Length: 537
Image (cartoon, rainbow, N blue to C red):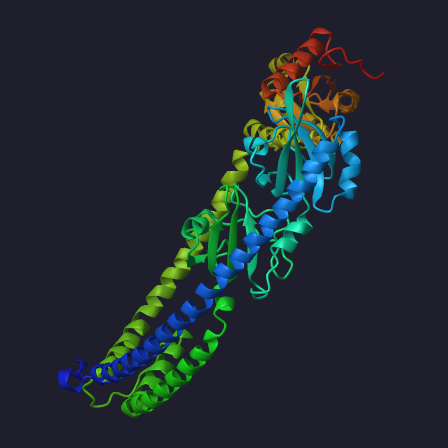
């Protein structure tokens, strides 16, 4: 037998040592050059552009807001001086005349709104800052978003102080926050006390911004320019400034890639340098690895053939003592063992598949038996309870009616004692067949136990269920059954109790059962329903 022992590995002929040294040298040089150029260029650009432009933009926006607040205060104070009666009718004309305010409201000393005009949904009670005599701008929260508001006191009426409030038009706020110093993706936002942008705070591209995350607001220190992660996960650059009074804050922010668009020139230079270095060292690496390309290709092709299921692969083993030689020898040993075990695995898989199929068929039979009555082949009591649970959940959600019919064979015990259990079983099968023929396709029929059957009628009220019950009762009474060896025809009747679901599962059962009891007490062969429902003739 040929010697199959693997060739000895000579450490001095390690291919990994040569390849790793070349790759490490190329990576180290590339990383050093790229890091130095990128860090220096980015640092200089960040200091010169952002730290000079953002504070100036915030300062200009703050000045515009202060000027607007002064003009708006004069307008609303003039309106407060002209009001004669504190009601909505007097406010309505001013809504159409005002260019700064979208709506007005009057509140009492407790902040309760007593009159309003305009298309803004005022809350029933305004926050305490609406009654601040300093007359600062404040945030009005509403169902369509937060907006800017201004308040001034009204002259006392009967000794009770009142306040006049005005909601600023969103287009005015959008005009105040417009800035030529930002790119198309940047935005200047006025943030209210609830950390949400105010209505009208649009981006330069006209899109209304979403709310800021708590992490972003915590990262933005007042007055400093920082980098942070926005709500959608994008890296952002921004600065935050709190306005006097502490109720409002101005935020300026841009996506990182937009704010640092000029850095692309630096990145281009870095890419060219990287490409040159990579090409140079790739040529060196190619010279080093040229000698091992063919063996690696042979190993790769052999692995692909094994992946396709071809295990009879044997590679040519040379006299090499490096890692390639060891790998080729190990590869051949692996394929030989795979061929030896393949037949065993296929035989075991066939056996396992056969056992799984038998087990699956047995499980299907057991599952069907667990929900089926063995005599009548109807659903059994257990499956009925599960189905009832699902139906109650459904009608509780949809509001549709649901009715139950409990059907009991009259004098079954006496007939069973007289003719025997075999005749009783035959009768149960016959009654089950009649019930199954008479119910609707949507109805659910099950053997509840003994001589009792139960029917669930979905989307059926009490009167409709009574009609179904009468149809079943008449069909059973009209039939005749041969139950003994004498072949005499036997007439059978049933009593049926009907109830409609009214929110309680327990009461549902009790109502149907009590109705059945009343049917038995009334002489059998009849239908009784819960309550005083008049049965159809």
